[in-house]
Image (tube, rainbow, N blue to C red):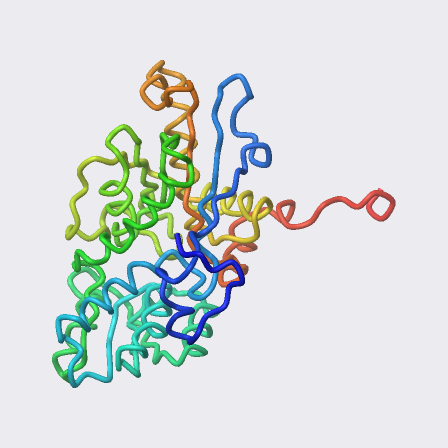
Length: 330
């Protein structure tokens, strides 16, 4: 852990370097979520990945991919990069790439990306191309074509092993922060880099759980089985299907405890809760308890809710967004 108690950085590059910063926060939200009765001995924690400077879980992997590409010499003579992304990785790469000479970034994004996410990318100086994906002609395919046509550097986040190797730092932090007490770690499944990184960095005794979208249940940044990429190994973790509304409900619940997360956070939460419930119901919970007899669950808070407020209000009942005020609403 970096010893920087005054939180002072000598340059924007140092500020952006994840190895120049303290660990991302880990917050106990057991009492706030109230998933299980106390006698169940389950504690629930959120690993808050929405801290500056990137405000999303893609920070470590983007730094790892770009810095290693620069070390290999892949960026030599390149000033323009192109990436297929749902937004967060592109935002991270846009900021990190500039420290390595990649001054411009083109992001090929799904056509249904929220307008707020496009606005954020454009604010970060990214040229956004909305692409209407079809089977056999995806954002990934289009980014590859653009890279070849214009001789840009293609950032292959879906197949570069530095994706999941960068995310291993998240698992390592969780292990240290819980003093080895964590027994369940959960996240939504998109590129599958984060869940692979968790699996590779946590002991086999820790159950790593992924929230995979049910078909026809879109959640920004995540994918259903038909759209998951086959590049990273899927061995060693548990996959559970989750639904759109349940993901939004859970994301809102997490945001009420620790402001504020997008719905992809909720997808991992849904999977974690259902997995633990199943284990308790069938008596296999002994396999996910530590030596103190506790289930310690950590889910990942992936990105900021502010980019998805319209999706939240469109998915959930109005009761989720306002409380009844005594006197005013009586």
